[in-house]
Length: 197
Image 1 (cartoon, rainbow, N blue to C red):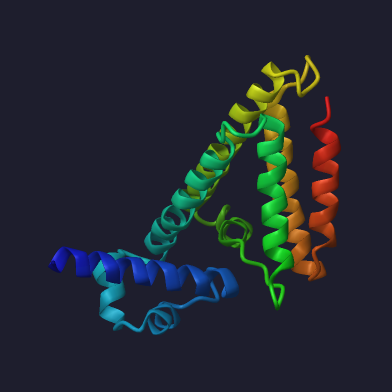
Image 2: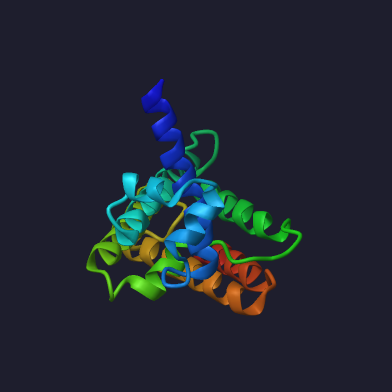
């Protein structure tokens, strides 16, 4: 029972702290603000995390492990063609942003990568590993699309997966500046053409 309570408190700090860090950035999010958001004493933070950098590393894993699992599941759906899996996944992400009452930028990995990738090699390496896992998931689906004749026979699936991932991250960055989803709609239209055989 005690270990469950400890795990819940750690998860709470990670979830609330990641939200704070996404909004305020790594340097703008102090430990005090993180624990206030989680509603726990400051000592709890240092019980679970050796430093703010350690917190950020654990938060990246906490936030992105389930997201990568959902991505892998969506891109492995046998009920749809490989091409349709990819298009449906990104269409749902775009629809998610369009449904927001107040459009906000919610990309934790984007926030950390811009601010910390060069300053903290450990955070930079974790961000790169997460983005690479995402690209690997997409590449596997693109290879299935290639085998099914949904892509040009000479398509380089690794390069294409990287390009799509970079384009999506760029679209999210532009979303932060533009505060409307037109850039995401543009991404989706271009993705449809990009994946045409």
